Length: 93
Length: 424
Image 1 (cartoon, each protein chain N blue to C red):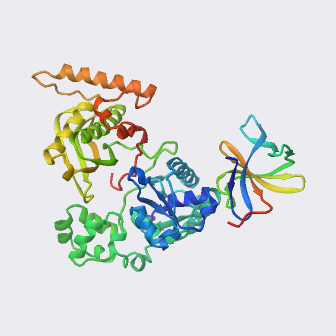
Image 2 (image 1 turned 90 degrees about the vertical axis):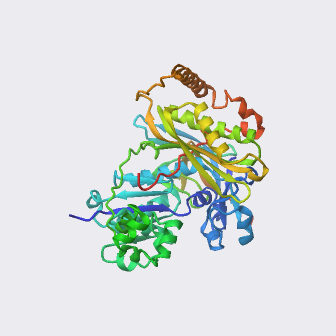
Image 3 (image 1 turned 45 degrees about the vertical axis):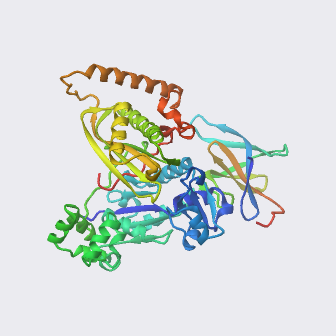
C-alpha cells in the first residue's frame, strides 16, 4: 500500500528517500524519489519536530523541507517516509 | 504544607480516536471499534464522539449499536497501535515530570508538585500545553483534570467533554465535585451506588458528609476510604515508574487468562480442552515469573443468560504445574455444574493468586509425591523452553486437540495485561 486516501485533496504517499545519518544520530533527508522516477533534491531542512498529519493521518518526525521554491512536509513514520501528496481532481468523498 | 499538583490525563475515546487518526476519512463520522462477531466477541470496545451522540454504548453488541446508529462504521481493534500511542503520549508527560502513573492504556496521573516551578508555575497553562502537544504530535485529544489529589483529578478529566482542562481546586470543589452523582467517583460502581442509594446518599457531597457508623457498617473499611475520597483528602501518591518499562512492572498478585469461545461448550471434553488451554498459559506465565500459586480460581459464564459464577480453592502445597492447575480448575467446575446442553458455557477464566516465589522452599509431603512433582516441574520447564524457541503451539496437550477451532488458539501470545486497580 503506497497511498492512503486523506482529506482536503490530499493522499498519504509513501516515498523513497535518500538520507544521510550523521555520527551523532541526526538524520538529514537529501532527496525524494517520486513514483514517476523523478528525483527531487531537498535544498533545505527548515525545521524538525514531532507532529501528526491532520490531512492524511499518521504521525512521526516531521521535516519541513524546501524543494526548489516550494516548502512542504516530509514525515518519517518509523520505518517509512511519507508526504501529503496533492491530488488535482480528488473524487468527492 | 504546599498542596500537591496532580493532573489526570485521559485520552478521549482512545481506540476510536486512534482509528480516526490513522484514517482521516473516518474523521467526523460515527466509528466504533469492535471485536470479531465470528469469534463471538463482537462487542463495541470504543466509539467515536459521533457514535456516542447516536447512543452507541461500550460493551453492547454490534447489532444493537447498528440499530441505534445505522451508518455506524465498525473497525477491528489494533492493539499494537494503541500501545504505541499510549507510550508516545506517556513520553510527552515525562517531559514535564518523572512522576507518571499509567492507569490503563489511555489514562495517566502525573504529579507536577515538584516540577511545576520549572514550567512557569501555572498548572492550567502546563495542562493546556500538554493537551496541545498531544494533539499536534499525536493527533489525539485529551481531557485533563487538575487537582490536589488523584481522585478529584480523575473526576475532573472524566467530566470534561473532550479536549479541555478542568481544575477542581480547594475553592471550587464544593460547587463542582459535590453536586455530582457519587457513581462518578472512582471506586463507586453499580453495587456501591445501589447501597448508597438505598440509604439516600446520591451525590459525592452526601458521601463526604456520611457518618462513620453507616459507612463502616455498610462498606467495611472501604466506607471511610470512600468518604476520604469524597472530601478530597485522598493522599495516595502518584507512583513513580520507570519510563522505559511497561505498565506491567508491578508486584504480580495474580495471573489469569479467560476466553469467550467461538462456540458454546456443551460437553465435558469441550470444557476440559479450554480449561487445559487456559491453565497452560497461566502456568507458563507463572513459571516465567518464577512463582508458584496457592489459590486457584475458576470462573464460568453461561451461554443462556450470560450470567456466571466463580469458585476458588486453596491448595496445600504451592504449585506451578499445568497439570495441577488444570485439574483443580476442572474439579471446581465439575463440583458446581453438570456439563450438558442446559448448562452450556460461553466463557471460562482460570486465575491463580496467593503467589509465592519459586525460591521459597516447599514443605514436602511425608507420604511421597515430592519426587514426582520435581519431575513434572522439570518436564513443564523443558516444554516452556521448547515453546520459547519454537512458539507456544509447538507442543500441545492431547486434550486440546479434541477441538479444531480452539487448538489453533495461542492464549499466551494473545495475552494482554489490563489496567491494574487503583488500590494496589
